[in-house]
Amino acid sequence: MSRTVIRGGLVITASDEMHADVLIEDGRVVALAATGTPTAESWTAERTVDATGKYVIPGGVDAHTHMELPFGGTFASDTFETGTRAAAWGGTTTIVDFAVQSVGHSLREGLDAWNAKADGQCAIDYAFHMIVSDVNQDTLKEMDLLVEEGVTSFKQFMAYPGVFYSDDGQILRAMQRSAENGGLIMMHAENGIAIDVLVEQALARGETDPRFHGEVRKALLEAEATHRAIKLAQVAGAPLYVVHVSAQEAVAEIARSRDEGLNVFGETCPQYLFLSTDNLAEPDFEGSKYVCSTPLRPKEHQAALWRGLRTNDLQVVSTDHCPFCFVGQKELGRGDFSKIPNGLPGVENRMDLLHQAVVDGHISRRRWIEIACATPARMFGLYPKKGTIAPGADADIVIYDPHAEQVMSAGTHHMNVDYSAYEGKRVTGRVETVLSRGEPVITDREFTGRAGHGVYTPRSTCQYLL
Image 1 (cartoon, rainbow, N blue to C red):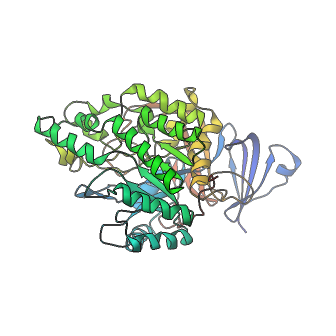
Image 2: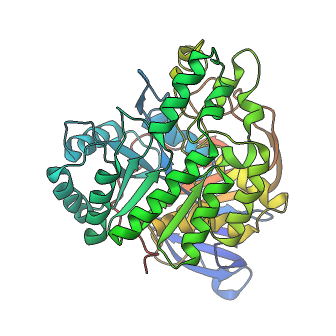
Image 3: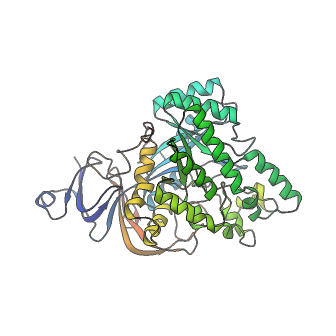
């Protein structure tokens, strides 16, 4: 029996803060006791971690990543090995990635392909959502089987006609099925049919620079699709999780539906909280680094996103980590913004950026843990195994120095991408040590983990459904 004691830190979960020691046995938390009490003092262990002056927090759960995703004739530049290692450096100990069904193929084929990519490669634990690109009777039956196996969420796209796109009828059928089998539909809510018209018209006018990516993917078309997805879910009697919400109008649609008592949930991402169309407009094609969908919005949208996080109209901050290198990948879109691969790197930055939001007064410490650890774990059936520090939970624990200062940079990050979306940004707070199921993955700012430590984790259904 291997034992570890973490001593002297401030343990922060979504519900509590206390100065406590944490006892870990065989990869799980077995007890917490107030620091300095006889109970805590009596614990002995092979490994002692001194967390004096530091936070002891649950490992982050990033419920939206795309490792090795094929997109636009290329692939996301992080593999499951490099991406999960970078996640660990950033204090994230579980990712939920997206397996992809290709049109004409089964869900099973897609899931098997993603299992093969990840197996034996991950430094931290992982799970999968399923992207549903081809709704038919066989697909609908497979959804039932996948839910039983622990793949309990399915992503559909109102965007990207000809690639991932589903029409309203296909969306309704999948939602009806999820209403029966307990699955959760995740929706990329943008009106892709209308956007394609605006893209064609912009290019015809010679508007080819990256900033036009943001101008054609209008906030109103995100709001319209969000509204439509909510109404389709209401017709189907199904829950809905709207991914990467970026526009204040879309937040308003989600808030309204929640006020009506509907099972509608919203996720946003750090890029929408910290970046804006100013970045898309950077000269010399630098703006291509910030091309993602939904797109970055003007800065005035940020206040609505922060407010949504405080009022719980938005419940989760994930990254939508989907990195493409500037050289050779983003450059595919020189002269045609529609050919720029869509996606930003961020899996390593999320926990630090959200801690900066605590420092800046946007959210509380416990809300930080709630939106980055506990709620994503609950939303996707991983709690209380993941997302908290409590007896019985996996010992996925981060020792976090809230006073250390760092400058984000491609020169120091560990993601396999040649730029940082936050280059030069100064933040307060830094990961010091990371345990995954009790094993040190980062030890005093050194990587001590290994590919293959991370294991596939089946999930139960969403724990928020009424």
